[in-house]
Amino acid sequence: MLEKNKVEILLIEDNANDAEMTLRALRKNNLANNVVWLKDGEAAMEYLFGNGAEPGGPPNCAPKLVLLDLKLPKVDGLEILRRLKGDENARVIPVVVLTSSCEGRDIAESYRLGVNSYIVKPVNFEKFTEAVRQLGMYWLLLNQLPETSGAKTNSEDRE
Figure 1 (cartoon, rainbow, N blue to C red):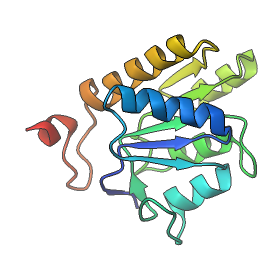
Figure 2 (figure 1 turned 30 degrees about the vertical axis):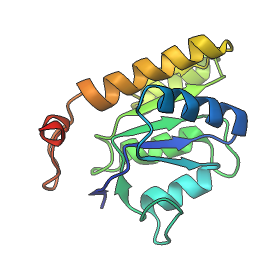
Figure 3 (figure 1 turned 180 degrees about the vertical axis):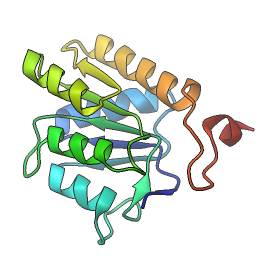
Figure 4 (figure 1 turned 90 degrees about the vertical axis):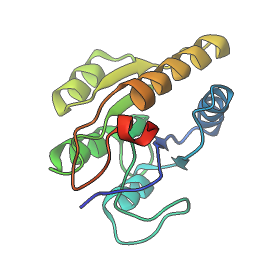
């Protein structure tokens, strides 16, 4: 079962350059206080559902937002999405696919599995930074999640 903790964003990205650009964009917009970066799908599955601890936090945590690349080593992003949206406790966690894949089958399958948003990574750094800023502002500050197992909503966190 997922529990509320201090992780706001779980970034699942194997490309170090893309991860650094994402983290830099989040920091620039003061949205990177509690980010955990995982570099492969197996580590993400263990972090979300496993028994072992990952650096940055305990397993079975409930981030406020998952930024998910699709093309990951060990376990691909679609399998992570399938597991998250198939789990009764985890399905309310917003998942945004942030990937370089603009293949129609990846987009269709992501939405079929329940992704909240699908964004193709812009190549230009300024456009990428703006896309990440908008993601963070919407999903962390504006979006309201349902209360689950005693966890506070985003508006209660701000009070």
